[in-house]
Every structure is written in C-alpha cells, then in structure tokens.
Length: 295
Image: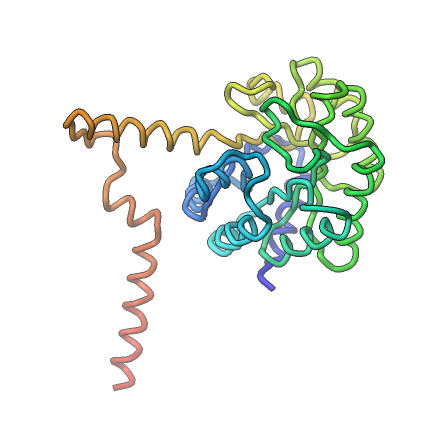
C-alpha cells in the first residue's frame, strides 16, 4: 500500500484551519513537485489537465480509471503534500464507486472527489453536462463513505454539478445531503456570480472548495473575498496547464519563424535542480563513498 497517512492528517489539519488555502492543480509528477517546491500545502490532480497531458484528449470521460490511478501513483510517490484525486462519477455503480475509492487510497491520494454527473462525464465548465437523480447521487456518495469507513481511510470530496441543469437551490440541497452523509469536503461546481458563491457558504456547513477556471462560469474574485465568504480551498485546475501550453506555443512559433529566444526559458541548472538531479548526485556520491570505505 502506497498511502502515507501523514498526508491525510495534513489535509485534515488544513480543513480545520481558519484560513483559505490556494490550490494550484497538477497533472503529472513534475507539476506536482513544482507546486510543492513553491510552498503550496496541497494540490488536486485535475482530470481535465491529466486527460489533456496524458492522452491529448478532452475531459469528456475518455480517460480510464486505470490511467488515472497510474498517473496519480506517480504524483503521490514524488511529493509529501496531500493530493486530492478526481474520481469522476466513480466509474460505474455503487460497487465501482467503492473500488474507485479504495484504489485512490492505495495509490496514495489523501482525498478522492466523487461527483453526480451522468457517465460519461465532462468538464464542469463546458456545455451539455447532465446529472443523475438526487437518489442516485446520494447512493453514490453513500457508497464512497461506506468504503472509507471500511478501511480505505481516505477523505471524501462530494461534488454536485446540479447548478447547470436544475439551479442553485437543488445544488445546495444536494450538498446538504452529502454533508449529512459524512462527506469531508463539499464542492458545488459552477456558481454563476458572487451572490451564489456567498449563498453556498451561508447555507451549507462544512469545509467547501471553490473551483476557479479562467474564462469559466464562476467569477474569479480576490482571495480575501473568497476567504471571507467561508471557502476553505480555492482550486485553480487549469492555470498551470494553460501557462505551459501558451509558453510551448510561443516557443514553437519562434522556431517556425527561425527565431531562437532564450530569455524566457528556465536555465538548464534550474531545470536539473527542480527535477532532482542534485539530490540524486549527492546520494550517488554517498553510496560511492561507502563502497570505498569498505574496500
């Protein structure tokens, strides 16, 4: 088993803290390492960004459970901060949900998000998404919590996308049900304005996450405003991927026009430091020293 329970405890401490935590989202081991190296206390493995970076495909339910678990294990093994995983719809019925929760726990995640979209699901800020009935959504979250209680001691983030199809009141009612079932973190996707964001925090008790997509449905407010509303985590699921894609496009455009511009690039020495060459060489040197002493 890969899970470090100390990271689950770290996440519990974050949820009990009074302040807002800014959470840049990762999609591979390198992006997660850079988030940790820049002193952020947690991250979320974005399903959108992982599907894009690993498969080159949109977040429309195309990436499989196994592919997500493989990527998540690589991330969790390389950082010492809590990582929240995107469990989508749980990949099937209630038994699939339980297997998903158990698999995410074994992979090293500190929390897993389960949502109420129909399968195949899609990015919460794109058109055409639909949610299952309130009864089915409740059963899905209940199964996740039952698996947690049976020994997969991972935290459960319960998400609803009902705002898009049925309005803010139905979405809030679902969050209240998820909270009463025992969900550890609550997430209502896609509030349209500041009033809705405030209403969620006013009417729903418990730790809540807000998802902030540049160009998406939810307004991106100042951090102090989000904190005052009562949110615990502000997630930025696509910011790092978007910045990386734009930088890559600029470099490729320069090559196309026979330009070689190096001032915006990370130095080779810095790249080696971030990736971990320095630590590797120090360990290699120590092993060589031990061998020479024995001889």
